[in-house]
Length: 296
Image: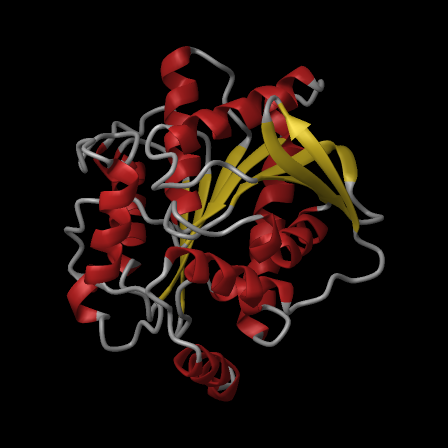
């Protein structure tokens, strides 16, 4: 992997540090995504997913009966359809699937369990649209990865049919912040620190238990969940959230695949148009999703 590619991203992030104001933070992450264009063959269609603003994306090779339901990152307080549209579209291309990205409600205006309620509504929307659950890949990045896992746990507990697989990218699964990599990777992660994650967790939890299974699914009983792919960069403070999750899933007899991408920073998929490892990791995720949904 040419280190110059990810180093260029690091330099850009350092040149535009995260502002203190929440509105400015939201504008910053939207700006990161909006700076990347969409290929001309990508079709974007806004939709109301049972009350949740959402959008379909598709490419010519996308199969209509195969869907990636995507939950964006942003620490539960930022991120949007705009910030992740380009990456979601590419993930769908690699998976040969349509994507449905949800613009779920954000904290602090809408703390837990608002985002989870919206994710469940989006999943029900797909079922009501006639998509077979085994043809759905439930996916998310960062906080969205934890949210995707919490959604699957909620579906299991409610007796709903589970999706065909899970794709979790740089997932935040421990809002109690007990992972050792919060310290050991602090010097190399340009995006996430313990202090910042603690602020985000407080806004989202709004008094809820930080070790509750539906906010920190690393503490949940994972038995019976569908096959999952976990992708994480080696230069992430959330590295241990992914590694420990894989261990717990494996111990619960869940089919789990853990990929640790050397030198990659948090949410490196967002920069796939400039970073070769971003393209390769999306291709790997697409192959995983194809294999699981085709096998259905």
